[in-house]
Length: 308
Image 1 (cartoon, rainbow, N blue to C red):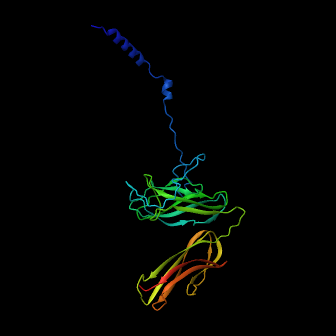
Image 2: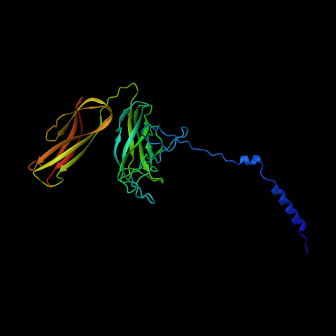
Image 3: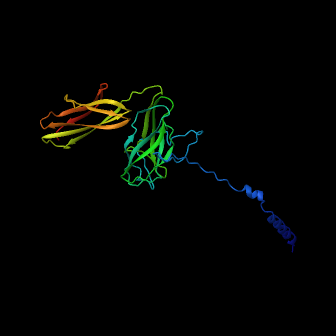
């Protein structure tokens, strides 16, 4: 029979010697990990706006969530499948507002939550494409927005140094990272500004006129049919005196609307036109004109008076 005791003794001795060699104090110190904290920079709490999720590094170029502007309806799945529906109610300052280089301003979108979910502050506003205007790439919503309710979403932006027209697009994001826009086509909403050189005195004026129309009654052929027209007018900046007037295709004109505009803003003006049952049927139009300080004809609203 072979004797194995010397081999076992040798192995036992080696094991005891190795066990006695613990890690040195220097090795223990080297094993202590150093935690790295991500600094989050917040806006001044006394100002309106949204606290950004993180400060972008100046030495790393920021890229949009997507460089493509998608107009397709997403096909979400999972927990937030019914949460991706929104509507843009209004915005301020309006598009094409004039700024000087380096001007800072707050852009506010009034967004309605048209989904079936309550949005909490884990939902985000995210940069989509175009000119970022010194904004961050993402912001947590400043407050909960319940289903069916609306709220302001404001961020601070900055006009670039060079003169020109700039436009940056934004969208919303669910807590699990799905991105969606407003309306049935999930489109982006944006901030669009005009920058003029510091040596230039800008000429402010009307940058946009859109219309809405109501018919009372909606259908039928009563003795009288009443049409109400609303012109939504956007001004790029202050105008001391401006005179506006509605014109009708039959030659009629409304009273002149005299007003003073103190800042870039959007205003709604109303006009009415009634038709007797015997009035001529067929196509007609209404348009808004600026008659002072200079005469400007804006696009017209085409409609038809019919009995149905």
